[in-house]
Image (cartoon, rainbow, N blue to C red; front, top):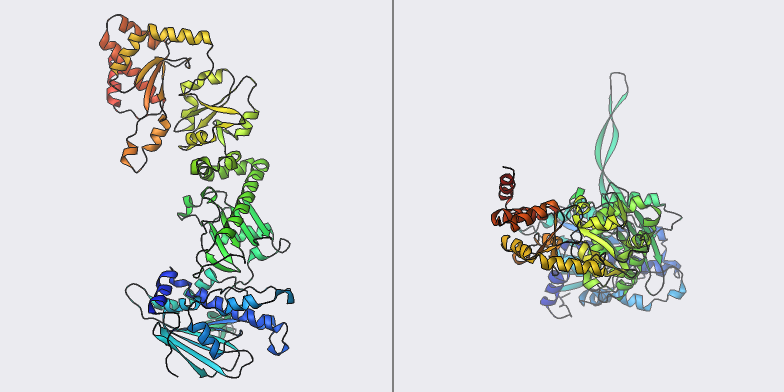
Length: 638
């Protein structure tokens, strides 16, 4: 029979499918195995009403055979098979699928055994040409006596001829390409490689996948030892073994799988030595049906394993579609691991993406509610475990609050923790519940470390009134509070930059008068510092310390430190507008005033520089000239 041309246009179309639709060559095996599974599904479905099939459910199987001498990979099934016309129709017309037609014509009402067809498009078969330079299909349709041989080397066409096949089913024989500088195609002829691909992509195909594997067998050598006992040795033999699991753990009922078994599965798959903080098992039916098994890690394994987060794997009817589906949950839940398996996904022709993501959005929204609910339960019932989790993944949640201009702030706010002392963390709701009636705002202080935040001089007045503070030590914390705006009607107050609200009107008038009276001294200090500060003033926030550093404008000192780590040089050079605040009643400031009033301007200027440097140090800023500071202090000690 002469060679026929593909009816679906041209070599360019086939080249597009091979080189563009599929981004990963190794998925060719997934596609061929999925087609084999579909063929068995069809015959199994037919056997429910046709006793002539003569096969029980346990008789169906898929076989993979490797031959290095001929450089062939053969995938065989005992499914429905194809006639010559079906070969020409299904394999000769790109983007036409017998599976989709079968699915459309199937009447589920005839049986309670739901049939899932994976191959909804007719291009999966052509993934074989990514690794093969010739593909031969030997098939025989159920009910037919004559077999068929379909053969193609790619876009130049195909042949369909009668052939011999003793049993019903299909053999797909792929002749593997020769090795090149870019690709070692011979690796696909290695047993370990093919077995690994089955485990990765097709481990949960419902039918058993058989391979011949090497196994060590113990045998008698025919000799005896000194005691007259027979000697034994080991030899390598070929053994037929099932290499896929078939029924995934998440498809099994809660009664059949304990949480301990789920945790053991998680550790094996994720290589995480620690138990997860929580396990979620979901079996949802409705507009979009799916099953999910999710794990919330107790710690970030990237710190110990050095790998990227594994995320959530997406399956459709037991076949892995995406190794990490970043469309299921937002980045703030990126730490969640596990699997989602749904028969209702609309797959594109490469089975790598989704044509329509409506189903995925529905699944993702439901999962996010369940993840949040599980975290809230953990927060209430096992505070120690939740705090350990938050230590690893709190930044993810805080980044989520800041994402998209605070769009998710109300969804995430109850999961956030903040320090109120060196050994205590609270949620914002807990903070508000502990507030005395006299307290209106929620006070907070930012610094690079917790101990530094606790020691800031601006905190003195707040603690003196018996109020708690939130100590912000994460670079995102200030932005988080800016997005949250308030908690239960209480605004946030930065003790470094904001008015604490403690002064009466009389005290404010007295402070203003003091500023006017001391204007000459304050202007002198600002001028002496040569642009290091934009203004100097007297502080109403200090009780024990001589000075402190505050800022004007939207950029705080914490934000400045954060931007210094940015890759953009312009951002690294951003500098907060500093304000030096002096405690007018402190002896050090009184010494500055005495030197100024006594006409000792150089000494007063040195005092000003020392106070400014002290304020910078207490604020946690980097000292630009530490040697100069030491020199000034040394001069005063002479």
